[in-house]
Image (cartoon, rainbow, N blue to C red):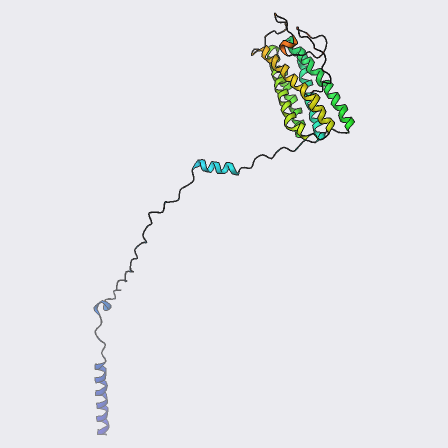
Length: 276
């Protein structure tokens, strides 16, 4: 019994000794206060060197941008060639334009020479219209409308409406100016399109040998008459000039007997197939 008690005492003493020897070490003062150590700063990498030899990109100038835009803008497509059927319709519309304008001038014009010129234009274009219709029938060509013939029809109405609004010398001057413009436009149309596009040999020969020379003569007559009228459009209005107005002096042909105002009618132009 005594021996067992001694063993127990020794065991308790050993346990106490071991417990004392396992005391935790003193903690770090910073850890004890709960403070978080500062984070470590990352190493700073120096920026790469700048290459000063390379120039910065430049914006294109306004002129360069405009030029580039212009160069890429598609041009207007060329006009399609006129067929013989369309050419016949264009000639008919052009004849009607001159007939309508000249018919009005015969009643409204005050200048004798202007009246004589209008009478000639109406007569020639009426003859030309009939002659071209006969040729088209002979060749079996049926007139077909085109943008050009429709344009001439619209221009006819506009020109007639404009002339109707004028009186006296203003009418005379405007009518003659219209004749100059019309005939020049027709010559350009013949040379640049119609004579190049016409396929039928007979139709082309009529235009080239008969129609074009007559239109050119009408243009010269209108230019001479415009110069005679002057800016005011009153020179010789309703009277014969002091020296007598001759067809050779003014370039105006009456185109029919009984020319007025001293305008001498020349011999009729053979085959005056005229558009304008």
